[in-house]
Length: 370
Image (cartoon, rainbow, N blue to C red; front, side, top):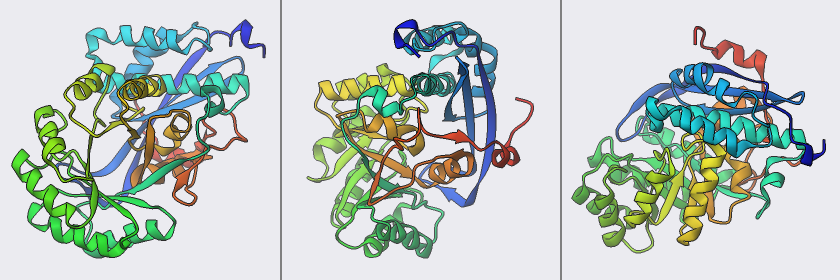
């Protein structure tokens, strides 16, 4: 297809919802769950179908079906920016952050995938690669895990070649140091150990925990306090141990959120999640903010979605290989990438994101009536 002639009008957007139980009980410092919901959007144009998804409640699917699908219908399939702007305007009165931004994310990603498929190139080639693969860190270590489960999971990731692993803390602060010690024992001295409190600590408690974790060679402290407490994050960044990165941003749904966080000098590393921040378009824009401030960007979860943009963006330092999402994406999608030597690389033999919905396998997880 001649790119100068356009990709043809977007004909339709279909949406489906899947509810996947966890493989065992899971919790972090502030939340517990037994399932994850994945909303899948599929956009069609020119005889090709692009796929995108978000981890959000079924309400995101209803918003796609009732509002966003009609907004993008008829837009040229190559004009992803125009479709993105139409969707952003359409949710103004619905409350743009949260579910609305997640719904936009699924459709926006499907449109990027569709564009690359129409051009018959991997998405990373369309975006312009800067690296062949992106470093990943194994992420899990839930507070619901017994010590033996924690050590088994983190140790397995080390054995698979991952040089970074992350665990949850904050559910029972009195036990956190001993759990971190067990994790350090499991992975040994050569693996970078990260912790994520999901905002469970208050400011002074977080400072004290940072010092204790640093003595166990913890290099990353994610959401030591609420990500909405920018002053608290700045306190941790200024007064925390040398060599320990303070990170937050996974709950950013738009550029204004990220700009406020960066203006407050609240983090050493910004996190962004394309399944929340309005898709690959939003993720690219968050990377531009980071590049302008010489600040690293880390991709939050959804490895099958993030691997292509992560390999095309200079500020990206690593990608979270989250246990739940890696498992779910393997269940739902053919072509979900697998780690190799602590990195994740896009499959250059497949166009777009390189994934296809395994409809027969996914059917058993389908949520009806959406």
